[in-house]
Image (cartoon, rainbow, N blue to C red; front, side):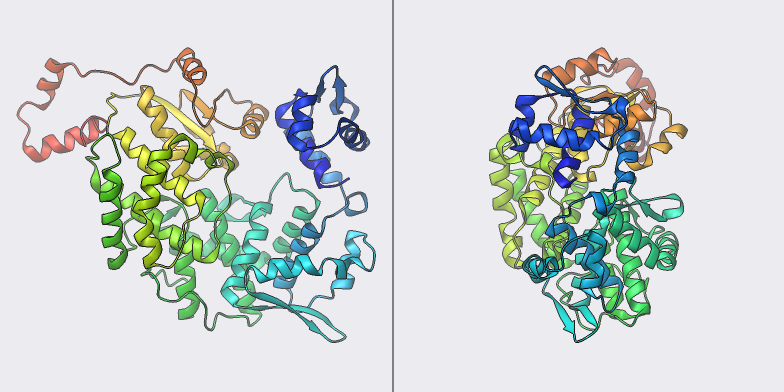
Length: 515
């Protein structure tokens, strides 16, 4: 059993039946190799969910629940780890312990004695990416050294996908962890149990009253805080970091040490929020973003009337992107790979508009950041041509960032007579029990299987909505967004209102019409 076997099963769980031609093309394997993989998997799968070749298709009845149970049964004595997997696991251990004997540690992987040495090039590559070093301690073991802030951030990225947020902001293991991810989560949750509780309390008492983080941003912060507190207790504090005064931050004062606070404030500023007041005022960046928005406006077909909201979203995103690029705090997102092809002119406009900021802060925005900024800009272009009245209640279930979903929401709202009161992360679907809604929408097969497992009715569409998707949504009862306001009724409603009262009334009742 190896990583490919598990990836193959995971894909089948979401996409069965799968044509053999598609499987061969997608995974780059021959049919005979796929058959060997199926045989290996079937040895550990219950008979009723085993994989079968049915003419030109590979089929299975496995659901998310059975997939989780399958992963839980796999131990390292039945799993062939890769060098990258072993090194990731070891790096987490080196962060959580002052000294680790690599030879002893590798015994749990059931590998030969020479594997430790053979993995050194992979370890060197991963540590050099973050300017870290693994030092040998004679007759004792190895330790991880380097910039303390960079060290924590690097290990956070290794832990992040192995855990989720449970009740009261407590971190728990991800339910469908593969063997190495399970090992990483287990050691983190065990070694940092006390600090995980402290981190949850810190978020609730200090950070949440000011800023409400989105699910993914909140998870990253909780992992970082837990690691930071654990290492501080062991004497590893940030003395002097690369996190200098390149941006003005909001002082949360969550820690006792000024340098620790400075780094934490920068990290928080880089994360995604569901609600963020304008607390990140950097005078130099404000003037640059204003010029960026002016340049972007010239490339849009519609005038942006809600300039303040547009500026605030672009400013906060660029502010966060500068920090994310400096500390490599972002993940790839396959759904954003096609943005440049879909909006080539706007992409070029965005690239040109942010060039001044890139020079001023000595950074280069990643393709993921450029794609997201294109979607933010396109969202406001769409928003400024939408006319609609009170809408049907639609909830989007997703695991994507707020910026990306914001674009998806605006495309939906530009076509249909809907209200989207909230977007729910797939790990928070229990919230649906207390909310009223008319339709659930998702755009991934994985989340569809979660919703089926939870017994919830939903509609699955493509992120890049097609005419077939629009037709499907119309069949599910969503009406067109192009509604008119009855003139006589409107005149009666506003008659006699003062200018201030009228403006308030228009914003509350016709926010999609008046900007």
